[in-house]
Structures are given as C-alpha cells and as structure tokens.
Image 1: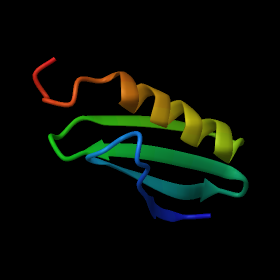
Image 2: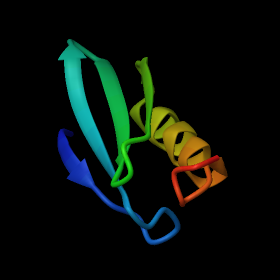
Image 3: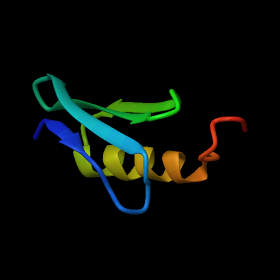
Image 4: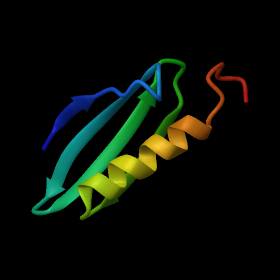
Length: 64
C-alpha cells in the first residue's frame, strides 16, 4: 500500500504511506499549516492509526 489518504476526523491533513524497505513502512501526515507527524515500522495499520491520533491532538490553527 502506498499513496496519499485523507480521513474525516483529521481535516486539513494528508497521510502519505511509503514502503521504504521490504515490509517496512513510513507513514507521514502533513497538515496544510505545515505541521507534520511521522512513524516508521512494520505494522502499517498501527502506524497509520498512530499518526492519525497524533494529528487529532494537534491544534488546527497552527499556533499551538
């Protein structure tokens, strides 16, 4: 699985999934305001869930 994804619970965020090595994934979340979250490991769904949780905790205005 690779490419970009968005989710309704994280408006303004785009999550990029990349397989960086055989069975090793990097998930990077990028917010329109310039913030980012990133996680790397072997369990793609856990990485995506973790980045989504981090993104939900960040203030949406970019000032926090």
